[in-house]
Length: 187
Image 1 (cartoon, rainbow, N blue to C red):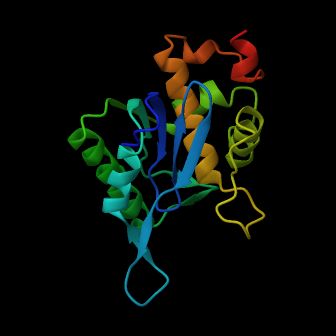
Image 2 (cartoon, rainbow, N blue to C red):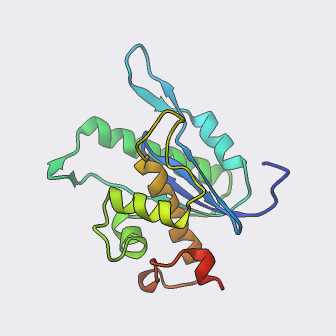
C-alpha cells in the first residue's frame, strides 16, 4: 500500500488479457493495463498474478467492481474457446486475489453497467472511450507513449469504477445523469 495516499479508492476491473484496472479517488482517477507476461516463444501472453496483487495493494480500496463475463457472440460471431477460457481465467484470478486481500467486490455484467453509465449511446467500445475521455480527461487512455489509439480496456475499467462510485454513493445506477462530469454534479 502506498503510504503517501490514505484516500480510499473505488476500483474498476476489466479482467481480460487486454483489460485494465482503474482507481477513482475523491480528487483524481488513475488507470493501468492488466499486467501480463510472455507465454513461451510465441506472441501469446499470460496474466502476471504477482503484479496483479501489487496493483491491488497500491492504494486502499473501498469497493471493487469486476466485469462479470460469459461466452456470448461478439459482432455477430461466437468467441473462440481459447479466448473465452482466457477471459474466465482472468476473472477467476481477479476474484481470488480480491477475496484473499479482503477487498469488497461486486461482479457486474457488461449489460448492467453499460445500461447505467453509457445510457443514451450505442453502448459499445467507442461510447466507453468517449465517456472515459469526457469524465476523466486527466487519465490517458493510451497504453503507451507511442500509441495513438485509445485502449478500450482502460475506458471500460474507468466506466466500471464510475459505476462503483455511483453504487457506493447509494444512487440508483439506472437513473443517473451521465451527461455531466462528476465534479460539476457534486456542486
